[in-house]
Amino acid sequence: MMSRKLLLLLTCLAAVTWLWSPVSGAEDVWGEYLPTGEYYQLLDPLEQVLMETGRFVYPQDQYLTADNKLYEVIEVDENKRVARTKLVEETKLEVFPLNDLRQELGLTVVEASDETQKGRIAIYHTHNAESYVPTDGTESINGKGGIHHVGRSFADSLTDLGINVDYSESLHLPHDRGAYRRSRETVLQLLADSPDAIFDVHRDATPKSAYAIQLQDEWMTRVMFVVGRQNQNFGVNRKYAQSLKAIADELYPGLVKGIFYGRGNYNQDLSPLSLLLEVGAHTNSREAAEKGVSLFAEVVDHYFYGPVAEAADGQHQRVAARSIVGVVSFTAALSIAIYVLNAGGFGPALDRLRRLRNGRRLK
Image (cartoon, rainbow, N blue to C red; front, top):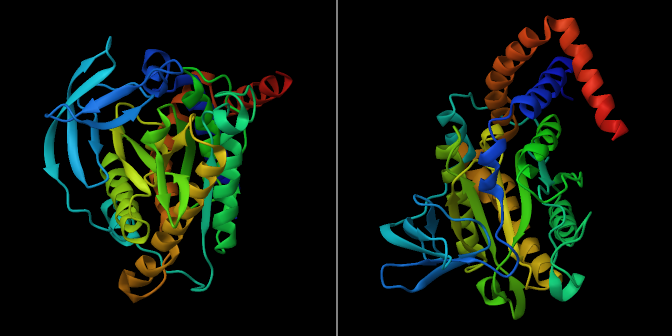
């Protein structure tokens, strides 16, 4: 159980980041999609299509392909929706144990008290309205769109594997430039329950063929990871994403279509083990997306609680939750100091938080 002090710490940080978020204003465009029906094509040096995405693409964005070739965007033609790239390297993926990532963050390793107990995974949706046209009849629903069914399938699959799941269906509407700023509070609320990892589940906006794949004699959608380049956790986020892809490549080759390293942070600055998932596109069926994300649940289980976890010093260890809390605490302390100073003291700061919360409830 999280202590009252830490809960207050996270609540204050949520209010502070809402009022003074660094991901506000023009920077929110980083999380914005193109109009439905438009998408960028990333081209390799031979003008062959590497990937398609409904996200905005910027110079210095990178893409790790399904066959683990890393390309970097060097030119973007906004009129033609084309991004040209250069080959950076052929990457040999490595699985980084959680203990290694924890030590890189400067945190101590904590041994599990119960080796048979699995930890907790958190799931939410920044873009709640996203839907799947073949199943939902539209690409967007003002409320809980088809993406919530995909999130539920992900949560149920993890639960079936014995994992505790916190699945938030909180709404962050509308689907606009401020959605990521609004979803920061949801992330902080989920952090209060000490999850081992957090997943923000989305769907892309591309032709059907960009994500469709046949695995185990069934058609389903592939999954793409999105990692924000501009946050203090990028180094760990990158190793974490590559570790999950390496495991997916072993268990279900082709399930993870690639990793997009995009401009922005997608709230991954709040947690070193946070990942954005694109599960299919609006042109795929929702059922296909549910099948794909259900297989991905096995990848998550394998990394956090399966052979990879068992190989870490020869024993089960649950380290992600402590890592998340440790990384948040310094930012929280600094933000609270600023907040209290601006409010005129700790008492007025708490009063302001209560008024903000009550005002939001009235809305």
